Image (cartoon, rainbow, N blue to C red; front, side):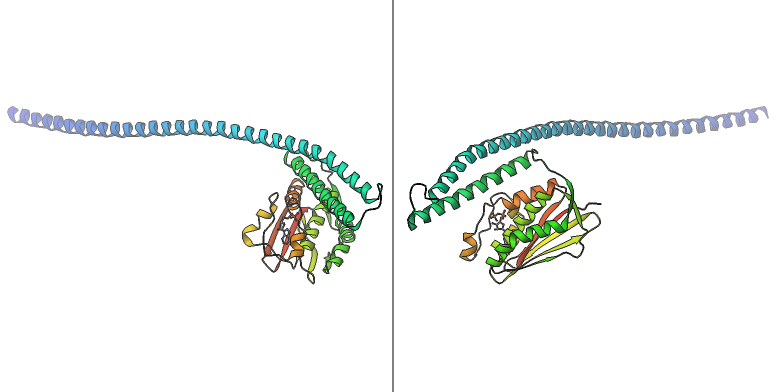
Length: 308
Ligand code: ADP
């Protein structure tokens, strides 16, 4: 009897030892799996850290490069501004002298001019004025681009600006046989801008409209207010601008070569007017854009902040 009990106890002990062994084996396996998972996670973490470090190094390099590029651009812009204003001043003085002497010749200070001489004197005057305008515009552009342009921002009522440009441009409109109309329903509209510069931009747009619209066409200015801006649309029925050149016309010296009638080709300007006008609009917190279709006309839009 005692022997049976002993056997039973022995067998229970054996079973216990077995299940303990199995449990231990499972625990060991679990431990190995956990260790492996931990190692994999550690490795992934190390890799992410390495990637983050590489990215940080790349970002630092990019920052250094960007800083170098910014300094180079700033130095180039300062050098360009300095060069342009020096050249402009060097050119303005002799050009003024040429203009003065030609005016004296025209007045007949050294005797009356023959018809041939008068014609040449007029050509010299015309070219002298053209170069002077070019030099002045170059100077303006250089000043705006180098941030040295002084603006007088104030509340500018729209109505007097429109009346002033109307008076100035009307003779050219009539001489070119164009219909000119101003549509502005709200006489209380006001810009927050530099009044003289607004006039300069609108006049530039209008004189372009005159140059590029054949006789019989029309030019219209429309005022369109939004909550925070006032837009002026200058629309003509002229030769238009090819689609691919719509942005290029705002670049300095770009003049679109197209099959224009000779009177338009002859009336060419400096190619700086729109570049200056867009820069001016932007420094006043606005924008100058264009929509156009070849042969159907152009619509330039000047948007400027609206005064409260
Ligand atoms: P400019 O008039 O002195 O040539 P701008 O910078 O004012 O210089 O204009 C650049 C070019 O844009 C013009 O030469 C012309 O080709 C084109 N352009 C400007 N305004 C018009 C317009 N209203 N219609 C057609 N083309 C235009």
